[in-house]
Amino acid sequence: MISIQRLFGKEDRFFDLLIASAEQARQSIGGLTRILRQQPAPSLDEFAGMRKKDKAITQEISELLVKTFVTALEREDIEALSTALYKIPKTVEKFVERAMICPDKAAAVDFTRHAEMLDEATGLVVDMIHALRKGMDIVRMKELNDRMQTIEGDADKLMLECLKDLYSGKYDTLVVVIVSNLYDLLEKVFDRCRDVGNIAKQIAYKNS
Image (cartoon, rainbow, N blue to C red; front, side, top):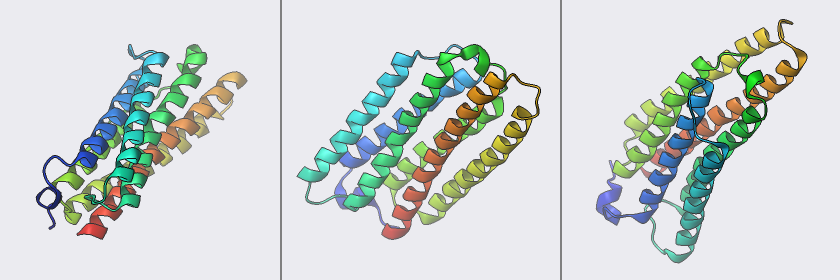
């Protein structure tokens, strides 16, 4: 197993920034799951602030790539991982924007199970970035990514169950339109987490 820290030093700035981006994604999803559980949550401005902070991290990574000749990972891999991480808080913000337009309509359905899955998915995102920094342990990375794929698959099944209930005729037409859109955005959040997992796994395999 290759130790990235031994090759490039413990203070590698790229990993610092990637981990910071992953933590920002976890913070944004943490706020989202509080909304899904109908608990006190950050304001829309605070969600926008999280997204802007992550965008600044992404921009710093891009600028550092231009200035750095030797990197711990291939440049295109760093850029792909950075972009995938940024898309998480960006998609979360879109969900929150829609949900806050008519919170009474969004409250008509139970998002608790979605929140539980998102909690685990975002934890895996952070774990996978930390695992990359520690070294290219493909066994560990495969375990983490397999779990991510399972969550994403279970989320897809849950979405179908929820849509079946939503289209059953017991909800007001406006509720159906609004909640259906929210389901689509939630599915994209899960997809964003899955994308990070796939990229991290590919990086680990490439560098093992």
